[in-house]
Length: 247
Image (cartoon, rainbow, N blue to C red; front, side):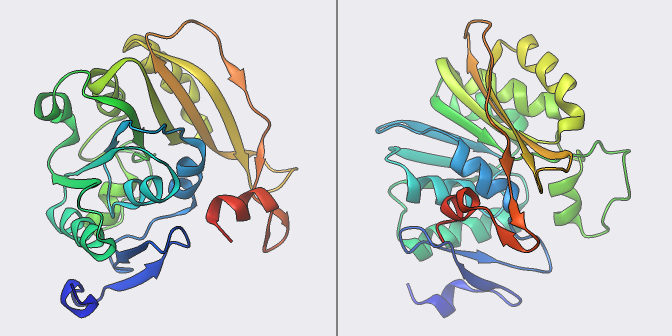
């Protein structure tokens, strides 16, 4: 399909620098950030596995994981119809309809919609801020992406657990300040934290993101990975960050 037929007013096409994949975005609504890219580099998807992205937004995680891995199929669920439509058009743009499905729906109903234990891997880059915390952007798409206005952290973790097979893996990116809450909620829903990696802008800065792998029904054993440092000097990415982005 011709590119111009896939674009709506205000939208643009950005190069993902992976397997010639591209993505449709609207800067006035929401564009993916570094957190989604880092999560795509942290998540392990094996040949033949089926993956669910809870709150897919622009579809960035299914697209990047389809480009980077040999997973069999990727499903993204998104509650906002315009965002789901945009993500679906990115799937058409890349001609990967056989590998990626975008579903418009409420992630809180994922297990009812897709079935229990339907996926090998679940990923999520959920809203970081509780509904009452901070000033919500009046733009609904940005407010939904950043604040827990349509789902909570527990909603995401519960549905991840319910849609994963036994031994399946859940990958989450979030803020370190909510780590205690995250770990308690994971264990409450039978997801055992297995790997953790803190992300720092600089070696001397506090962590501003955390990447977590949890296994459904896994044993109590946690590996803390070396920190991921974003910048080696002001404005210059570290080599590992460049590799994750595909530079």
